[in-house]
Length: 243
Image (cartoon, rainbow, N blue to C red; front, side):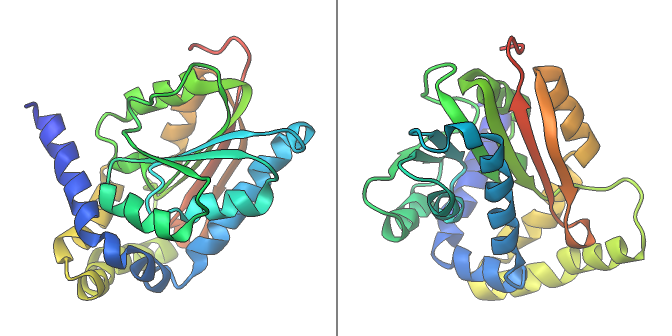
């Protein structure tokens, strides 16, 4: 087994371990603002597909975790066909308890989606892209399954090259305070120590934007949230995109 496969398996195992306390940890550690970020992402994305709002939108939430993003898609759509995909079976089991029975939940990975090409109107991934070891393969898959004009929503913790004083304070929180609180809540200090490390190893918002443009996306929304802890990109697939 390759090093990348081992790394990916370890990340999935970590989320299996913290699934039970994942939601409460998120609410406490983000002071609840993560719910606002998800709502805004869904609202802005749906506006780009307003002409299709009355039809059965095909929506996929990748790395769906416990289903928080899917709950928001349900609030902003009517008669949408929504599928959640995640590699962690324990996270999916929590999602099943929270979501309506007609929501399809599938165990799977972002880098290999069992979805026909050009069949999806809207694909979202919230706080999951940096956990995909082969991110470029995942972005290629997102491009493949989206229809021409389809919308990609990415909420993620991105790093910033030049930090101001607020960024430094936020960085101290994520590096020192968050692992302690997260470890206390989840009983898994290692998992919440992983979060700031994964952010440092991830892209800047500008680097992510560049990758999407190279794949044939038009960037409709690019936004940093409080203290640059979180970034939102909403991109629309241009007809005749690379894949």
